[in-house]
Length: 201
Image: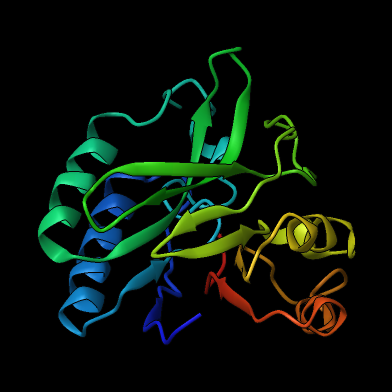
C-alpha cells in the first residue's frame, strides 16, 4: 500500500439538523479536497448527529443514495477525493441502519458498511462484513463500538483488509474509549485510522 493523504473531519454535527450537517460536510470536503486529501473520512452518523432520534425521530431516513448523496457524488467527481460518509439509511427490508458509505473519486457509490455492534434503540445490526476496495486498497470499516473487541477487526483482517477505518461518535466518560483502537491495531498489525466527532449533542 502506497502513501495516501487522509483528511479526518472531526466535525460538530447538530443532532437532528440534517440540512445544517449536510452543508457542514460539503464545506469541510471542499476544504480537505483543496488541500489534496485523497480520502476524506467523516465521523459516525455525521449527516444526522448521534442523538438525532430523540429530536426528529426516524421517519425522515431514506434509502440510499438519496438526492443529496447523489448530488455529493457528482461534486466529488470534480474534486477527485474518496469520501467515507457516516449516514443512517433505510434498507430494502424496511429496517434502519447506521452505515458508512464509500463514494469514490469518480463520484460512484462503491460500497457501504452497516454497523454490526448496535447499542442504540433505532437501528438494526448489519449482517455483512467485507473490506471495500478503493484506490487499490482493501479497506475494513469498524463503526464506533465495532472496535470494542477484536472480533470484527479479526474478521476484516482475515478477509484481506489492509487498513482499518473507525468512524466514531465515542465520547469520554464512564464508557469512553480506553485504548480499544490501539489494541485492534496491535492485534492485527494493521493501521487503524479513527475519525471521532467533537462536541456534545
